[in-house]
Amino acid sequence: MTLPIPNAIAAMAPELTEWRRDLHMHPELAYEESRTARVVAERLRAFGFDEVHEGVGRTGVVGILHGADGPAADASRRILLRADMDALPMDEATGLPWASRHAGRMHACGHDGHTAMLLGAARRLAQTRAFSGTIVFCFQPAEEGGAGAEAMIADGLLDRWPVRAAFGLHNDPQTAEGAFATAPGPVLAYADQFRIRIRGKGGHAAHPDMARDPLMAGVQLVSAFQTIISRRRDPMQPAVLSVTRFHAGSATNVIADEAELGGTVRAFDDSVARMIIDQMRAQCRLIGEAMGVEIEAELGLDAYPALVNDPEATAFAADICQELVGAERVNRAARPSLGGEDFAFIARRVPAAFVFIGNGPSAPLHHPAYDFNDQILPLGVAWWSRLAERALPRAEAGS
Image 1 (cartoon, rainbow, N blue to C red):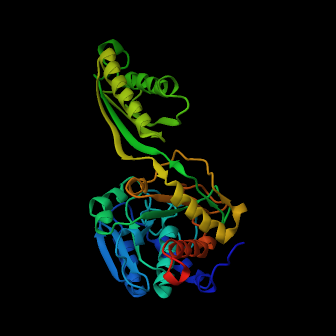
Image 2 (image 1 turned 180 degrees about the vertical axis):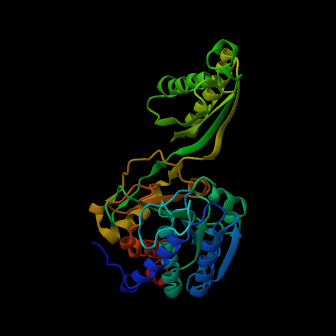
Image 3 (image 1 turned 90 degrees about the vertical axis):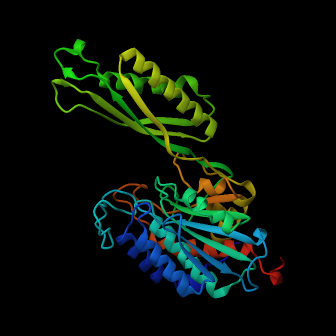
């Protein structure tokens, strides 16, 4: 049996859409979310939140909301709800009236929608207070490569406001509009970046014997890296090593002095990722010696750990999905993705569940033609609200 979205939440749809599109028009990059954070903080205060803390993890916002019976006595009656706020450094190509007004900045991952949905739940829960305990609303900066969750934790997020569980919600264009998907265990991968600089000896292309070609050393590295995945990794452990950038030279008749490689490593098991990085470091050393070039390897940059869903928290979150849309529209065994997500830092500290809400057919995430589906905003608000009420039930509801 499904329960309808409350009329009060359904009636919020025009306002939620207005909030979301305003955020979309004014995207801000990692740790630059000053306007977004100000809008969030102002709204939380207007909703009557008990506490609003700005500047957590540089540009993060934390809102504290107590239930009808006052603050929670301990962490067992507190939960954390998280949304991300930052945009991506790319140009938008949607042509929509609410497209980004800033060149080189775009909400191409739906963080504008995530923020709007959690703000909607914040207003609803502040109005009803139909829960017992305390909800920690976390509006996080710098998910896109800046490890904003880690920065907020370092700034005391989980020490100042300890919680028993944490929840995150992310849109997914590969899931049908208004459906949900999640799974216990690993759902998103360890993800990092690497940069490798190769310094050789440049020269005339007609006399390669008088040079030490960094480009050829880079070619050897790219080839050797692929053997790490095919020959050194346990084939039962998913992993990816992708070289995505290779720069060298500027003229057709000149052997360059330097070359640079860049890319990413992904795996569901952190130990597999460490093995890959160790092997990359060894290959850099050996090929550098063999080719007579100097190789400087920066490996494991901006690493996010694998996001591992707690089984109990995930089953609970999926039950809330099922209450809203029915069992047939909830995938409880979603296929893990080798994408990365820094909610993983929170999930390492407390039992956590990360859930995907279907954006419906649209351009993929991180694509210049992507846009968040405003039709799912009320459903997201309903999910957040019901999850909080079920997680922190009032005494008269049987807790």
